[in-house]
Structure formats: C-alpha cells, structure tokens
Length: 359
Image 1 (spheres, rainbow, N blue to C red):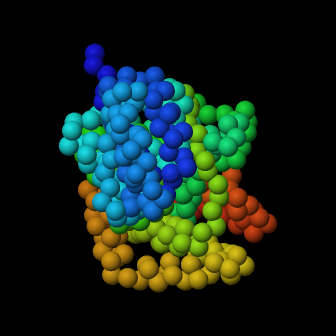
Image 2: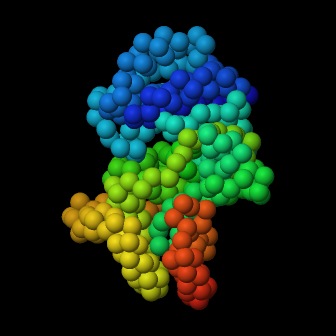
Image 3: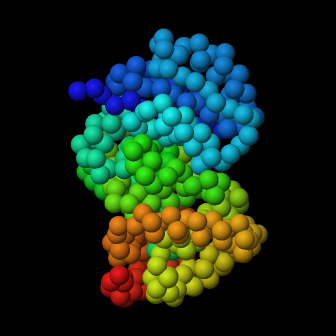
C-alpha cells in the first residue's frame, strides 16, 4: 500500500536563529523523503531568513533534504494567514496531510512517521499533536495537548513538568492539537475549513480543534512523535490583547445561547478577576483594547460567520464538549495566590453548573 504524502508548513517569521537546526531535523526524518515536501514561509520576516533560505537551503532540495519551496510576498499575515498559504499549496497538489512546524521547533527522527502512522489507524482522527518537549531541556514538557478553560482560555497541558512525571497514552484524545506541532488530515480540512484568518495570532489552533470536534472528528496525542520547542513564557501586552479578544469570540461562536447564559456567573467572576490582575500586572491597557475590539462591527461579523459555520458542521451537543472543559488554569507561569483562589471558586461553581447543561 502506498504511503501518504505529507507537506510540512514551516512558518518562520523572524526565527532565523532556529532555521539551521530545524532544517537538519527534516533531513534526519525516518519517513521517506520523496513523500515529504516542505513549504517555508517567512511571512514577511525582517531578519534575513529569505536570503538564508534562498542561498543555503533551497539548493539542498531533493538532495540531502526533501523537496523544499519558499513562498513569501513580504507580508506578515499572522499565524493563520501564513500557514493557510502553505495548506492551500498542499491541497492543490493532492497531499494527504499537512503538518504545522513552528518556527522554533525541531523534529525528532521519527516525528513525522509516528504522526502519520497514528492518523492512518482511524479515519475519524482529524488532527494529532506530537509530544512536545522543551528544546532547551529535553527532560521537561512543553505540552501534551491543548486545554480549554470554561472561560475560553486555551493553554498547554503539562507545561513545565518533568517528562517522567507525565502519564499520557499514545493515541489518547485531547481537546485540541497545539499549532506548534500538529498534523491535520487534508480531507477533514476540506470539510471544516482552514485556520480562521479572522484571528491574527493565538487561539487559532484551539478554534480549529473545536471545529473538528463539532464535525465529529477526534484530536489525539502521539507520544511516540517527539519534538522540541524553544518555548518561553511571554508577557507581551499584545499577546494578552489577542488572547482576551479571541477567547470571547470562541465562546460566542460555539456555545448555544442558553449555555452562554448558564455560564454567565462564571464569566462575570473571571472578567472581574482579569481586570484586577491586569491592573496589578500593568497590562490593563491591553485588556481595555481587547474589550474595545469586541465592540467593532468586524468582530461581530466574524462571530456571526463562525457561528453559522459551526452550526452547519455540528454533530455533537454542547454537553458533549463542555464536559471536557477545564475549570482550572494549571501548569502555567501565571501561578499565584489569586489564581489558586480563582481555580477553587470556579471549580466549585462548575460542579454546580455543568449538570444543568443537558442539551
């Protein structure tokens, strides 16, 4: 039986220092190189990555590396827009899978092969994520899958834990696959659509994973696919702004109205807590701008379009996906007395509210 073809989409916006190691990890893959094509997308990078790719990497295409092409029009289209360029290229050429390779993430030798093998076991798997370790410390975990909080936050499960302390199973279901190292079935993307370009950065992978779930697909973890991410927590004010806006967009797009109403007490408490934390952390300006963004017509149009798409795809009830939401923020660098108290309060409220949702 012929093995599937896979396209690796490498979005390398201002990641030039990682490029040589990432490229070498492609050349070391156990999967047949003639079945791999790599689309390098600098996405308007300003660090000279285009010249490096053109002069040092493209000449190695189909020699000691798989086929490599570069697509760049000098515009930064964000995470979704940049990756979608590569995904569309792969779709037009009949690839079976696309793999999103973060700019600062290198692959273990069997990373691609293990992901493909897992996807081939079950046609209902829409996406799979590698076991992501820290590049700078291979004994530490970066993520074993995305988690969605009841207030719409997305975060990395098991982040910062010792590899030996994490107990996960190969092929186990996760809420969504981290876009840092995720493989998607092309036939599934043709059904549900690509990454949402209404999101510039953050929560795009969460939204796509949720959309796949709505359409009846699974998102799973491959423990055998090992990758290494040079991750460090960022307190970038713009990051907070995007995440705040998009978490609300996701909730308004996917929850039934009665589910949103039932969830309102939790959302009000979380909102008050975020404002207090934003003032203490001196990023209240970002929180203010995030809330202003939610008032703009373009955001309400985005929500309307996403909501319509989700309802057309929906084969599950709200209770089916809301029961796997987390009432706690864990394994993150924002741990504090306030978050511990918040986790306890929200968990208690969620235990009371969740049984009400029967639709």
